[in-house]
Image 1 (spheres, one colour):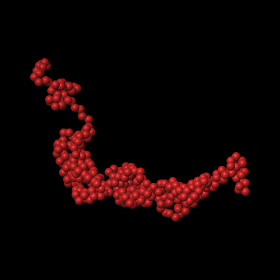
Image 2: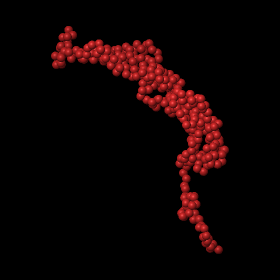
Image 3: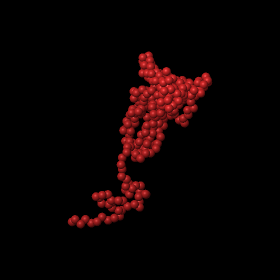
Length: 328
């Protein structure tokens, strides 16, 4: 009866019975796939309590079912592909396509276990996400987020789940793996009129008192693990200029999780020291009118006549005679 029904449909549509059978088999495969998806979701939903694990297992099961469905569908439409080797090839290709992301994440987990680019407790940044690694799973790792809307690498309290496959697509920046310190800089700008050498000496004294001293043995241990070399690891104050004044940049090493604390303590000392120094003052964006004829260096303005200010008489020239007072 089934063959007669297929023959009737083929004659009605003007197609061959073999084509109609393939279409009917394909529809049956799609129906079984749809039912299987619901069955897998319900089965895993009842057996797994953790939401993240339930999602991963459900996704993996559904993708595996999709791979099997594609293989069976290919068998229906391509009858010429016979032999164990051919079908194993098709099976492996189907599984690889269907489970591409889970397999990539699993490979990333193997990479984490073997190469150890980071461990639980390390602070890292991958793509635009930064945080402390709090958990590592076969398919993803979890970060306790820092930064974002919070300044100075402080925690936001959010957890970010990142697929392990990202390790093959994005660079990883480690804050404390290998060498447990980062460079921090504090820029202090003083006016051009300030005694900037005195200000620099005061900042160097603050660094000497508060910056953490890195022992040579500790730096040598880091150099043994990775080829890390610095010309100097001691604190330093660099000098340059900006439009507002003379910028003195304090540069020092500190643990990644103490960057904000150390900067806060140093700023308190800076504010106190600069506030008690009469010949050093902070600079900030201001607007100033400079009259070269009046304020410029004497040798450079000797041939320039001063411009009279609005509402005021021009200054008397040397040797000029004052006019007689005719108010008598």
